[in-house]
Length: 428
Image (cartoon, rainbow, N blue to C red; front, side, top):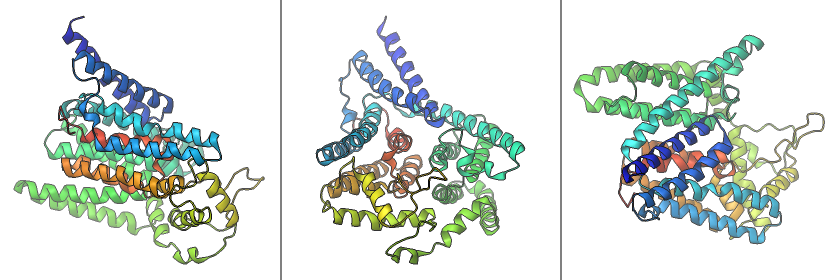
């Protein structure tokens, strides 16, 4: 086979593998996502050989990849003092994506502005297809049950991940790319469908009702409209009207009682005096903010009790330590009648606290290096896609233990680096 045909074959193979990964990510085919990540890395290394480039690409000298490897090593070493080895190795296996995803992206020079644009066109189509089918299915469920809740939050995407926040991030990635492409006058699709897609996905995002993602999206839209206002004189009137119209929409949405606004009103009514209680009652209700803030008290108490501030309690014992804490604080731990476990099994819902609990100050410092590497990527690229998506994911790390599930790990590790990498720049 001639060299050019070989190279074209492997480039086509990489393109196909990336599309399989993105498709499986959106539709939550976890096994396929894992297999495609490994296949991308293998195909990338073979491509280097075929193109007579170094087997280990200079891109592997990427601070984000190095920081992820360090965090994985710290978590691996915590097995040395973990009691529950089965849980520890299970967790380590899940965290192997810390190396696999950045390595797969950096192992060759396949990701360029051109290839990224081609893949994102397909990605937007995949997200649209998933959202459209979710709405269709919700309509069917509504006809059968007459329950409007099927159009909102977790129920809307129960067919896929069942996790509205993570799916919201997948949607906003597509939206930010569509808006930025529009600003550059580089429509991803024909103009009419491009605009329709932005409107449809925006409405779907509001239906998902993720407080963090919605707040971030509203901020992004005002930024986008303000940047349009600054860019072109002839567009100033349109930009002003759009800003006023969107502001009015937000006032109506959050000023009236509906499924979206009620989620924000619940947070606004949070009782912060709740945390001064020494003990709780199994009947106590915690909203999302209360539960997450409570972890800032629980994690330091666990580390102090076990004298494990430096190295943590170990990757295999972190969850059992939290479970013991929930029991000792008399929080709801399920009933035989309901067949549930209550708060048992709930992690810290904060990756900073999770790293601290599992591997102590050393683990937290390692995760902070990962965050600093992401911030450095923002400062180097200065592109809206890199900046907004990365900042959103960093904020997400404060409300979710992102490396405790494969789905959130893929999202956190893939998209910042995917938007960051450019051409043959060895520093990228």
